[in-house]
Every structure is written in C-alpha cells, then in structure tokens.
Image: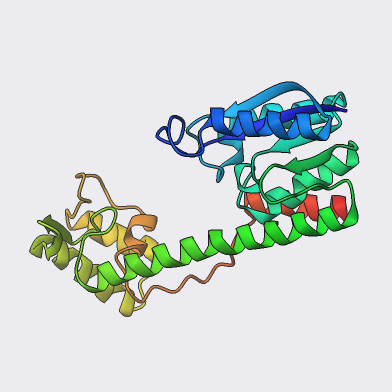
Length: 245
C-alpha cells in the first residue's frame, strides 16, 4: 500500500531538539517497514503551530495529495502532530474516509482501517481538544489574576500608562473617559458622544479624532443593542455541518 508521511514541530527549537522532524520521520519509516507500507512522499511543517491550518503550507499540500487519490495511507508520528482541534481532526478523518485513505499513527496505535481503530482515533481527538481548551482556560485565568493585581497584560488600555510592571492612571485621559461615560449615562448615543468629544478638541492617544468603536471601549457600562453578526468561521462551519449531515 502507498503511504505518505506528515511530520510537524511547533517551534524552531523542536525542529532540532526533542521530537524533531528527523526523529518523527525515522519512527514513521520504521513503522511503515514493519507494517509493509511503502512511503512515496513526506510532507513537513517545521516550526509551525498546529492551531492555524491555513498557516501550514505542508498541511494544505497534504490535503491536495489526499484529493489526488494516489495514496492509501497517511502516517503520523502522533495524532497531535496533525492538530489538537477536534473539529479539524474529525473533518480530516471524514475527508480521508471519502478518499479511502487510512490514518495510522506510530504513537497511540491509531489505525482507522477498522472500527476499533477509529474509536481510538475519536477518543484521542476528544482528549486533545480537552487539553487545548484546558490550556486556553489556564491562560485566561492567569491573565485575569495579573490584571486584578495591577500587572500590565497585553496592550496598555486608554487612560493608563506603564510604570515598571504596573498601570498608572493618566489624568488627562481619565478626564476624557469620565466625560464619555457621563454623556452615555445621560442617554447620548455613541455617535453623539463622538461629536461632542471631537468638538471639545479631545483626541485619541495617537492625536486623531474619535470614532464610535473607540468611544465604546471607554464606556464601562456600555451595552450592545445589536445581535452578533455572521462570522466567516461560523458560515464555513454551517456549510460543513450541512455537507456532512
């Protein structure tokens, strides 16, 4: 059976250390030899995170190879080399199934040529998604803790400046924030607040006139009266769900 190998590492450091591309490739070739598979090509993404599919040229090339219909097996070192996003993994497995391509992994004993192997794949996809969300949750909690302790996280918000690792109020900007909030509490709409601030000669930090979007960020009690719009990812997911149902 004709097989294609896909190897990936997340950082430039991993490209030369740890589970390197060469290490993955060697393990995959040993696995293929043991299983009697012939590797006809190897595709790699070096120093690239698995989080952004479009940023991975190798991953996109892999999709092309699958659709060309000239391979029987896709071999990975481990499932997380493909992605930690469950939707990506399930969608790719569906694509592989449509083109009659098996998915094998060296680590984790995934082999989708049989129902038990597919179940193992699905469970690992679920666990990878859980880990991805755990990391995201822990990161968010850590950032919230730093903010509560006055530490600077990310960009410096309007109304403050950085002194060491702390945020310190800027009186002139705080005055503008108070004016914007006062006008909002009096029932003034965003457009009206923009006009008033600009007429009073107040400018943004960059010295430009205010816009509604910028003013909205100044108002702590702002409540959006509009429904969330359609997003690109939402539309694509909708089409995907309709296509596979």
